[in-house]
Amino acid sequence: MESAPITAGLDGSPESLAAAHWAAAEADRRGLALRLLHAWILLVPEPEGVPVEQDQDYWAKRIVHAAQAEIHQRFPSLAIVEELVAEEPTSALLRAADESAMVVLGSRGLDRVQAFFLGDVALHVAGRAARPVVLVRAGTVPRDGTVVLGAGLHRPSDEVFAFAFDAAASRGVPLHVVHGRPLPVQAYAPWGVDPDVAGEIQKGAERDLRAALRRWCEAYPGVPVTDTVRLESPAGAVVEAAQDAALLVVGRRRHRPALTPRLSSVAQAGVHHASCPVAVVPHE
Image 1 (cartoon, rainbow, N blue to C red):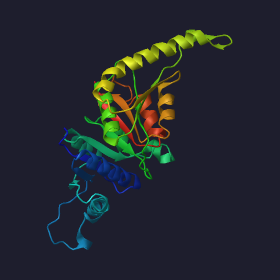
Image 2: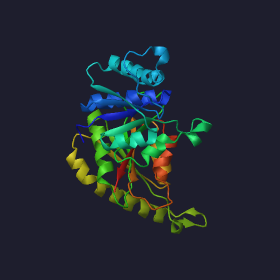
Image 3: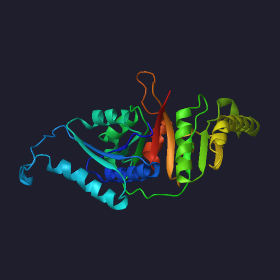
Image 4: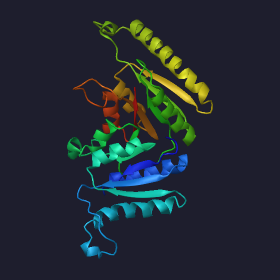
């Protein structure tokens, strides 16, 4: 999929425009084309030459054209494709994901009450897309900080590790790999945490994390890697580590049990609380 475009979904919001700019920078970095996609179920193809005041698609076209003009100023040599489709946004974006290197969408996090009811197009797509989905907030300022990977060790995923290492390598920044592990009941004594039990758990988790990273560090010798194990919830550990990050990378299983959320608690926490862009990478 390396020759596939990066698709940015546009809906006219500040968040989606921030996503389009982030996607443009990523496409330029990777040498890929950028597709600006706007889906509106009421889109009506009009014949050429229709006066503006009679063009039912005027606002839809303006959303895409305005974004394209802004991006072209920053990246004049970037190949940009504009696409308007008469379809519900979720289905259009999920289909676009099948033929894209990644999909980039705006996200409101939990900054506002409406985030709880977020036309959860972004979360729905992130939980179902076949390719990585990056969620970007409005006002996102490009950072030169680290790429942070929230790493699970039960079944480490090649897709998630590869995405994180590629992201760090392409940016020329370090990769910080974080694993959170809650303390089991047996680690607690009447006076608090048993330091001997906690120490053994810490050492075992650090050993497992370094073993999982070994072949990736060998494959990407130019990427400086630090690894951290925190004896706390994985979600809390990842959000804390991502405070000054350029990008947070988390995984999402393609096939989760019925009646369970499509996004894990770690992915949910990252999307809602991390201030940096969050890449949700599907894996087996």
